[in-house]
Length: 77
Image 1 (tube, helix red, strand yellow):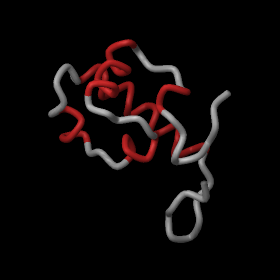
Image 2 (tube, helix red, strand yellow; image 1 turned 90 degrees about the vertical axis):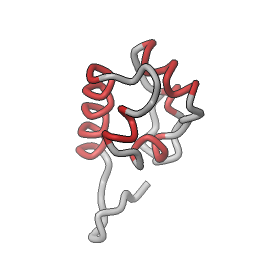
Image 3 (cartoon, one colour; image 1 turned 90 degrees about the horizontal axis):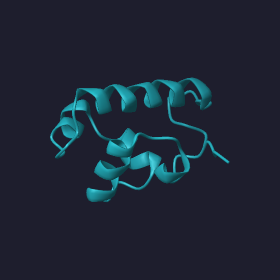
């Protein structure tokens, strides 16, 4: 079951094997950690390439659409 909280574990979502391995190798475990990283920071990770960046950016876009916002732009969850 997938939860819409910023502290949700990345392992609770569907990721490619490569993305899972990169997250694990770099101790990236929560949605909040992933959302805080820029494209350049992600691309600097070993074995993180354009295809994985596209996967992460698609996830971020979906996250933004399904997570309610307050006036400050911060997530309610």
